[in-house]
Amino acid sequence: MHTSSPKTRILLADDHAILRAGLKLLLDAQPDLTVVGEASNGARALALAEDLQPDLILLDLTMPGLGGLEVLRTLQEVAPSSRVLVLTMHDDESYLRQALALGAAGYVVKKAVDSELLNAIRAIMRGERYVHSAMMDKLLNLEAAGTTDSHIVNGSKPDPWDILSRREVDVLRLVALGHTNSEIAEQLAISVKTVETYRARGMEKLGLTTRAQLVRDALARGLLDET
Image (cartoon, rainbow, N blue to C red):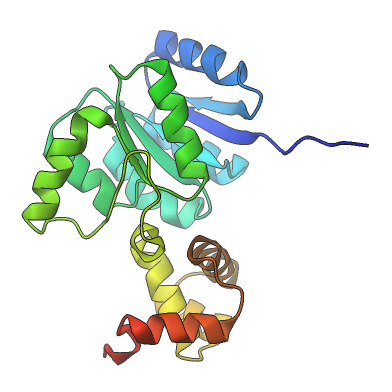
C-alpha cells in the first residue's frame, strides 16, 4: 500500500489574525504542508514551538512583548530541529542581517506573492536557505561588506557547509575531534538530546554518513586547526 510522505508541520507566529487566517488557508491547501499551531505573540510562539516541535516556524519580527528577533535567540534551545522562515514587513538590511545571524533559514517580506512564500518553505525544508528576491541586492551588499558569512541563494543549492548554523558547526567540529555526545553537551552547556539533533541535522545537510567522512571534510576546511 502506498503511503504519502509526511507533511511539513508549520507553526504560524504573527500578531495579525487576518494574515494568519489567510496563511493557514494557503498552507493547508498544499498537499505537503499543514499548520499545526498559531501564536499571536513571541512568548506564545516559544511555548508552542517547545510543545509542538514543528518542522518550520513562520515568524513575524514585530509582535507584542517578545519580538521576533528575541524569539529567534531562544528557539535554538527550545526547538533546535525547527527551521525558521522570517515573514516580515521589514525590507531593510539591518533586520535581514540580524535575522540571519540569529539562525533564520530564510527571509521573505510580506509583499511576496504566495508562490514565492511556498517556494521559500520548500527550499528551506530541502536544507537550503532562501532570501526574498527583493532582498537579494541587500544580501549581496552584506556579503561584500563582510557582515555575513552565509552563502544564501534564491533558487539554487548552496555550499553545504554554508547552510550550517553556528551551533551545528560547533557540534560537528567537536565530533570530528573525537568528543562524545556527552562531552560535547557539557562543553556547550546543552543537553545530549540537543547535541544529537545538531549532529544528525548537520550530517544530513553535508550529505555525510560516517565520522571518518566528517573528519576529512573538517580537515579540508581547516576547522580542526582552530584552537
